[in-house]
Image (cartoon, rainbow, N blue to C red; front, side, top):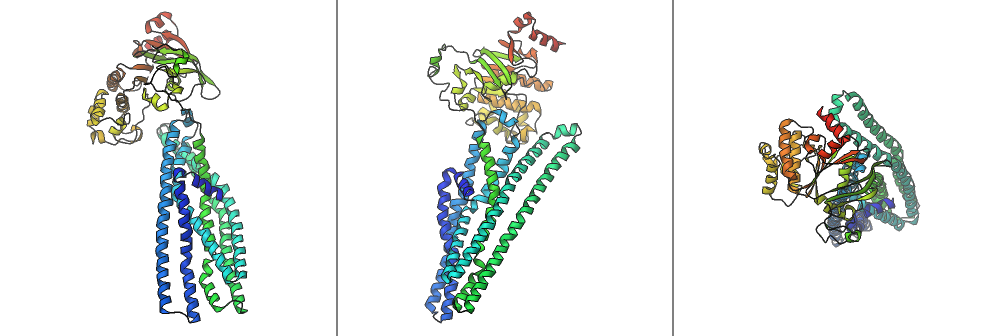
Length: 584
């Protein structure tokens, strides 16, 4: 169990010293908790000996009040040092987790890990900071208090002290066996929680599809099974835990009775005085209460072990290497000169790029260049690799072979933040946060003024419908933009990109699934966004990219054809066939 406490302290990072300092206050608090009992014993002994005086009575009263005040002061200091440090440490941890998730390849989020991340954030971290960080010093207090009580038993009589020590040992034995049982269950309990969270998220996100295909019975059954599994796991935990809990209570009861019986026996034989007999009656029910409370708290900490395992597992997820030191604004020769690149490097360049999501390679030897201010369109059948090529430019994944360069620099040699400043993305599937319209646009550039945000909204053709919302720009929209139409969501996402004003735009044709009115507004917004920008367009409707400077036909993970619209039509290949299919 010391290992769990050590792990808890270590995860607090820079607040580790505050947690350890709380052990000092806990030490003195443990002593102060026993001072009233000692004073009571002293008072009784003086009365029975007939040596109590007014002065002594006054001193006892002052000492009693002082011990209570000191307990309160030490408790406050302990809360400031420990509980507050716990909340601050986990606030830092959440920020570190957010930064960590930002650097993880996108594949991690499509491998069934969403439930795990949700459970870590909403269950594990909350459980530890609310239930565990505040009890670390209490455990120290309990250990110190138990030590003091055993010492006091030895002071009364060595035989009573030895019995108290043996009962304490029995507590330790039963308590550790109990903790072993709870440790086994804690892992399965947390895994069950993760599975349940994932099923709930899956059900909520897919409720539209579930209803439309009349699958409510089937999906509800799966969700119900997860709830029943969670219930069975919790009951199983209680069934296995209860006998050990009863055993601890038996140790407490039998141990207390044994100490009382031995004290009465020794008093009857005249080995101890009546003063010590009365003193024992004062101490009796407090002799083993500290160690009993210690193991009651430690049982809670066993769940912490499984929670820490899951937190650490998420943090162990491999990040994209983000050790680049070169910026796009610096001297272009600072590392790239060795590669012999010409000064007039293209804005974007793919050099013999190969990539696979797992062991299967999905892109093979992809190579092309995109000039500054030009438009390159990616076309081809579904599943050919168009979206993958665009995603690799934003470094959602790292390539397996070759290189991708932006402004002559390998994107792996540039910090992720600096790379993303160069790129804006507009995808068909838009996600808006449950926040105000203003904040959803302003997140693209946090230092933007309100006038700049409103100007971006006007250029994106969304200013008018925003002003018709109940609170205008300060209207809170539903999670995912649920309270807006698809076209309105698209225009707000385009306004976000306009405000960002990055030189490179990745555009997944945003008008492919909207009505005619929204299509016109979105096309106008895109025209504003793309002015004087370098464009990489994933095209679904080929009529929209006829004027592209370069069209790449992507199929089977490679570039099958490349050229302008006219040259590809003249070649009468795959592109010409796709145009004919859409025309018909």
